[in-house]
Amino acid sequence: MHVVFHAPHGRWPAQLGLDGPKGPPSAPPAIPPIIINPFSYHSPSPAIDPPVPPLGPPLMPPPRPRQRL
Image (tube, rainbow, N blue to C red):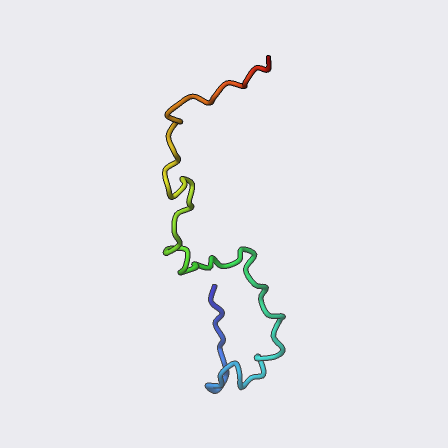
């Protein structure tokens, strides 16, 4: 929408006193801006697996409990 002023004698709206008090400043946007963290691109992947492979099964089965006589 455009407002057209027909100022007499070549005066601008500011010279005619039409630049009165302004309204309150506009509110900030409701959605906060998206902040891109540059460190998120270089973060290592989470360590899910252990760094050293676990030991295999024992070579001999565990000994049975001794029976008392």
